[in-house]
Length: 257
Length: 291
Image 1 (cartoon, chains in turn brown, red):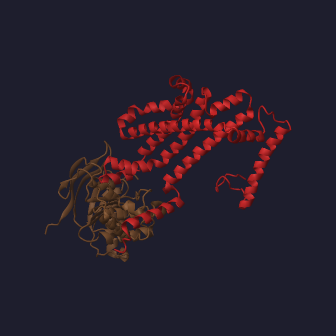
Image 2: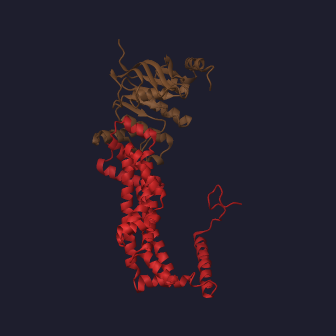
């Protein structure tokens, strides 16, 4: 049975200038419906890899295919979310969520209904008409998530989406994210520098190491789904944590801080 | 010890009840102007240097309610300043938008705007009079010249300093340049643009009055000068107060615009607008939770 591959890279390389190789020789395949975590220290090229896939920046060498097509620019089946919510301050939650439809000229009653439902789905009932500055950081990220869902993209690229939030809010939002993207349709790439978070969320963890940015290991996570916070204390889970640590420390030993 | 502490400029000032505050303000006012008045009456202050507040007040009363001589000057000055403001702001913002859209224009033409700015606009007055004559147009031209720069530089700065993530968001959504400009750049830049407009408003009034000092047959500036040349100091001071009134009314107008346009910068306004948008939405789409 051939797996349905949505994203694949081979020999992928991105060089910013003479000295900075952000991504070097990246080889990977990402099956449809999977959840991949990209974990690694700052500057290891995880955000760059995400931006290459999104089409926001151009690769220097190698192949990068999304649905068997070379990536040449942003595409409508790929949606992004950032560490900052990036909401437009002058728009209410629902107006922010409707931005993708406004830009594509697809705004109609149906789109409005979907925007409304997405806000309910991310737990923002009664905050549909609040402005971003009236919302907490966690709620702002929820609006951003609703906006991502509104794009209808089934490939979601998340760049440390809850990294700026407190631990409790982050855990809750991670669980809600899992609930939303589960199933065979949505493929998720999740960038983080938190090893536990990476393992907890993913079917597969790409461990990245810096200078030059490489995917040093691809670890399959065989933990039962749906995930549950109690799993984080099991020996299996800690095994995975140790594996990731070993890859990172094996590489980082002897490197300047 | 210090009044300027962690609690702000007024730290250390005891909180008074509203009545007490009004009384305190009244007292300060009374000491200030009562002292001045008394000094004048008793001959300590020369009337030719500082006329008594009551003589200035009387002169104002006369200008506005007895002869009505001030209105024409007032209207003319406001007209010249406003026209100058509109022209200066249009040129400034137009150039800024062009520079924001076109990197080539920005590189090769915008530096002249900066050189232009460091040249004191007021010093150009003689040329402006020579080119535009003694009538309204020279006042409008100088006002436009003096107020052109703040809207230019603020608009340009605002349009170019967009959050990098917001730009990426718009790109990833497949936005056109026009959509990005309308939905992201302009609204993001509005606060700093409006700050520029406030500066321009004051500049336009200064430009108008300086041009009137140089040569004019009508306007509050020339009125003040005529009084001063005749050593009519209370008239002169009255004209100065009229100028303050003009400045104040224009400033209030700008503050009002700020309040109306930049609703997302004030909590009370956000609540107001949020309620309004909700009502609009419900009217248009009904309650979607019910469907």
